[in-house]
Length: 615
Image (cartoon, helix red, strand yellow):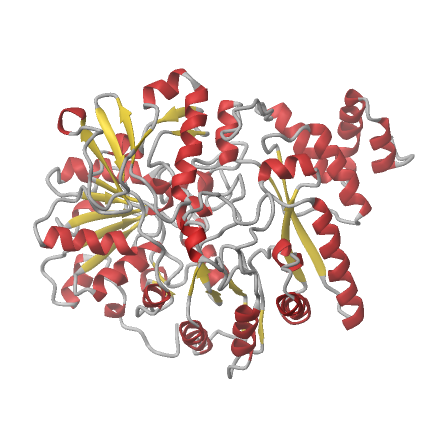
């Protein structure tokens, strides 16, 4: 445990007995979590629970309730005064449970001892249906990444079908999308004041068509609404689903977005525009809540893998303006960066140094992308008129300030704290931001200085970067920079390591079977990475997840922005034909790769990969 001896009442209660220890005979909000309860700012149930607690509410968390049998876990705390909340988990439950090949993963990183039988598939739907069966009159509010990415019609890879808004499948009363601090507090105010919920920003609701007209306007909710093709129209025509997605993504990345409406059978899904990004003070408040930073005592003696990974790490900011085609971060956190204050970051680091098992090494000072801290548009008025999903693709926006000065100051301030021996950067680094010529000599100098400091002082032997592919055509589809930039960064990395007599590795991440990628592209990737002396480890097969450009292209066969056809590897054979090229260096893969290259008519690549070792 921590150097401070925590009592059971220092955690949010999880049982009736723990409520009684606090003298509570009634609860205001009960949260049901798909993850184990870790009282830490990286776990959503803890964040929302602590935030509501700070408003004077009595909040309990039921982590990983048993959804079988008599539902006793759903009944043990009774009915809350305000609402039930569903926090399905820090990771999408289906990605958490299954690989891209739809095989069961070996462990659930967010469960004690990695057990993968403690949460159902789609806990948002399962938990909500049980609660509505037991307490039909108590509102159920859903949120987290699972609900956020399924707020409108979406493709479900695991069932291989188009599904309507998760509001339809779950029966929930309200959906909060994105990061939930602002809407959850506003919801509480509305309920306490006896107001309706229909006009709370960053929420979605389902209305019977008999009670809602698309022409209804709500003051302060984006003016003229955006009306999408209906769910039924998308079922009949994939082109309409692709058209819908472009509008959804653009609205999700606007500073001033419109209300989005979609008809599903005899109902309307109404998605209110999001709040503007949190201010620095609001984000600091969220991170400064009185977390114990520990798993609940009920897990004593058990290992929670995800907690072990982030135990000694610090998140510096929210948001990501990369807009990568396969990534859901901007759809959930948004593209606008909100950075914590230096003071808030240092307070969290100091709290970590007081943990008895801390040895002086921070595993990560990072965020969704490690080096976007403090970055924003120089002219915010221009940002507020912009609908681009990425600020750095197809090229870095001239209005983006890519100055790394503030981040460099954070690193140095953290490293000067007593008890800190070394701080590492475990999050992925955007090297295109480091290499970008800003046209400002001072900023270019600072960014060069940051690059050197990163490589010499903050790499734990291995620096993770994500070129994702070597083909510029595929990278264009991914919204990633040319592979030439990776060559440039590797040259700098190797040069600095030689100068400083360091023996460090650059670890690149790559994806196979991304829309637009062929087996021949993967064969060429194998040859290029072989020439660079990489034997790839950090690789993944593309997994279609809701609310990404890549998933829409994979499902519809069309690029949502151009409506032009896009090839995707769909069958297990096609996907394996691509994935196997990652492992050209394994003797057991050689003959299969040679057969595939002969089928392509590429004997030149056989020679480049294997030379005379073709048997």
